[in-house]
Structure formats: C-alpha cells, structure tokens
Length: 404
Image (cartoon, rainbow, N blue to C red; front, side, top):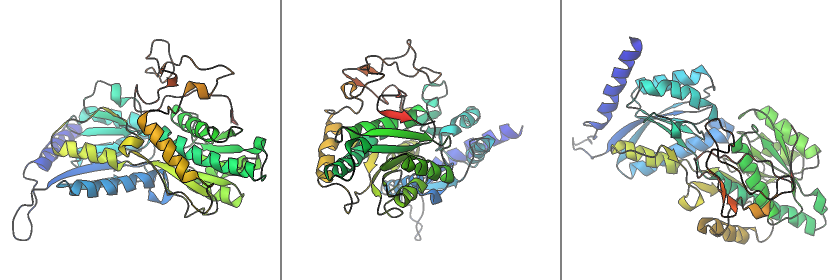
C-alpha cells in the first residue's frame, strides 16, 4: 500500500512539474521558464577531485546551459551512495520526491535502479557507464556513456611524446619507456581505456610497454596510491589511471614519474608530474536529456557521443613539462579522429598473442564475447561503443602486462 501511495504521489508531482510551471517575477509577470526536478545519485562526492567531481561539474554546466534555453533545473543530489541496497533506497526517495529523471553515476548502481524503475513508469531512470538498460523491455530506463577511448588515445599521444623525448635526450633507454596504469577492475570499460591509451602512446613512441595494476574498487584513494607506488617501483616512468581519486597523481610526482589524469585536470595537485588529462563532459548529455523531458519528448535509450560532439575533452596541457610539439601533434590526431581517418582500435596497430585480430564478437547479454552476437571487427578496425554505448573491448593485447 505504501508503494502504491508513493507511485501515485510521484505521478502527481511529476505532472505538476509541467503544468503551470512558468515562474512569476516581482511584477507578477511570467517569464515563460519551465522547471524540471532532477535527481543525481553519486558514488562519491566532489572532494574526490575525480569521478564524482566531474559529474558535479557536468551538472552545474548543464544547469547554466538549460537556463539559457528557458529551463530551470531543481537538482536533488545524493552523495556517497554505496553500490548496495542504499542505491535502491536513493532511487525510491528521488522518484517519490517528484524527480522527472534520475541519473545514477556508478557502474554498480544499475541493478538497484532496475528494481525501482518498473514501479515508477513516469520517471526516467538513467544508468551512466552501464550496459543493461539500453536493451531491456522497460521504456523508462536508459544507458549513457561517451566515447572516452578517443580521449584516452589522445592522452596516450601526450604520454608517448614525453617518453620519446626522454629517450631522445638519453634520460632513459627505449626499453625503459614503461607506462604504469592504475585500473579499477578488469572490466571492458577499464581495458578499453588503457588499451586505447597504450595505442596512442605507441603511435609516437614505438618501444613503449605497459604494466597494469588493478585495485578492485572504483574509489579507494589509499589503494590507488599504493598501486601507483608499486608501478613506479617496478620501473614505470609514467603513470595513468582509471580510478576515482587524485592520489595516483600525487604519488607519481613523489616518485619522480610523469602522469596523465582522468576526470579532472590534476596539474594543481601534481604540477611537476601531470602532463594532461581527459574527461567526459557530462553536461552535453544532461542538457540533451533534461531539455527533452522538459518539452515532453523522448530521448535515446542508449547514448554515446565523443570528441566531435564535445562529449569527450582534454584538459589543458601542462606547457611547462610536455614534450615540444605536443600541442601541434594533438591537433593533428584529434582532427583525424573526428574525420574518421584514424580508428583508435585499428587492427593493424596491435596483435593478440602474436596474431592480427580478425574477429571479436560484440557483447552478448551476459557481457561476454559470443559467436551469436554482432561482429565488432570490420573494415580493418574494432568498432568500440557502436553496438552499445558502454565499452566492450575486453581483449588483452600484446605489449600490456597485467600484474594481478
């Protein structure tokens, strides 16, 4: 009975968002603006200066962009929500509070979100970075991710140019051009990212190799620091990451290694180490979705855009320490990606157990490569994030060593 009451309350509140929602100014005149109540559930908070901070930045930028379109957004943000039943509760609370759309920002949130979505058919539920909602039978569930592998490749170019500079100057030997990568989990999302990064680096520094240390957590500042430290001790001259915090950056600097960041510009915390960063600009997606909801329109059940649409961006170069010519090379490679001339996972640029990749089926419903699924390799490249927005490149290529 309580659930039924909550559903009815939610429907009433959502309807209220779009009926008579124009505001009045001090003179009693309406300004014609629409107001949408939006929920955002975060695994961390902005203090991580990484993953959740990037979502908050996207939230705030979208708010300003929508205001210019005559749409006011009332955000209700929940921080430090675990990938457990607390996420289910958070979705229920936001839906019952009248949110017209609810964004879940962590991979492990989707199962809990999907328990709630059927009970609130008039609320749109979005699971960011995930892979189930896009193909389910619910009309109010969605997945979204960006083609971050494009940004990873570009950041890898910056890293590779720095390593090649060290080789050319005689600071390190070619075989010492080793990248250390702090990975969250051995999932496709992480593997796709570090493989794209590695290929970008190797495109300008042919001798580069990579070592990957997984921390088995999306956000554990201490373990991320420990992993970065171990990678430096293993001979890595440059560190990158797919983890939520800034501790790999500060650790790399303390160990005398260079660094490239994810989700945020970390030059401020590691000015002697951080070369550049890449991130998803979530404001692009937030703006599209909320504008659609405000105008009573549908939006895609699965969404993925990249550099060409401004959904993937690089942070500013640290001009004090990047290799000479880096900005010019980046501009060249970025244009090649935008035009389609350069495919990040060009199968002629890597091998798997010594062989060129000729076949790699896209993900099936269980998240595995299967022969009855759509083929991802064609026209000489593995086509990432085309079958679904969430990455599915989960192949271990030569040149990358997994330490755990």
